[in-house]
Length: 165
Image (cartoon, rainbow, N blue to C red):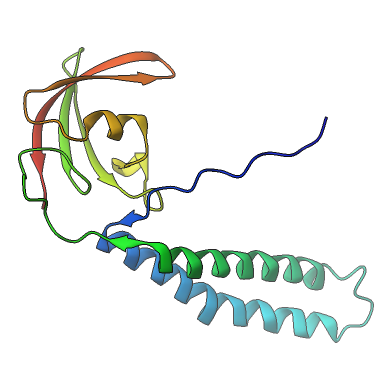
C-alpha cells in the first residue's frame, strides 16, 4: 500500500483585507527578517568544518527549506486571492465577511465571522467560507433556522444577528 494522497481541493480564493495584510506581513517577516538570520547562522556553521555532525548547519538548512517553501506558497497564493472589502448589496443576508450571531438548541449564543480559508481561526470565532457551517449559513437571514452536520451529529442553529462591520 502506497503513501499517495490525492492533492487537496484548493480553498476559495476570497480573503478579507485583514487576512491579506496578515499574509503579506508573514511573507515580509519570513523573507526580510527570518531568512537572512537563518542564512547567517548556516554560513557561520559551515565555517566550522564537518557539516555532517554540525547541528546548526543541519537544522539551519532544514529551516531554510521550510521558509523557502512557505514563501513560494504565500507568493503564489497572494496572486490568486481576491480581496473582498465591500459589503454585499443585501446586508440582511449572510455572505462572505459577515459577522453572525446564532443560537443553538441549548440557547447558547455563538458568534462567527465568515472569512477565507487562509485566515480561519476557530479560537477567534473566524470560520472558513468552505466549512460546512459557513456553507449552511450562506444566504440565510435573521430568524432562519439551519441544520449543520458535524462530527457530534446534526446541530441546529437559528440566525439572531448579521453585521458587516
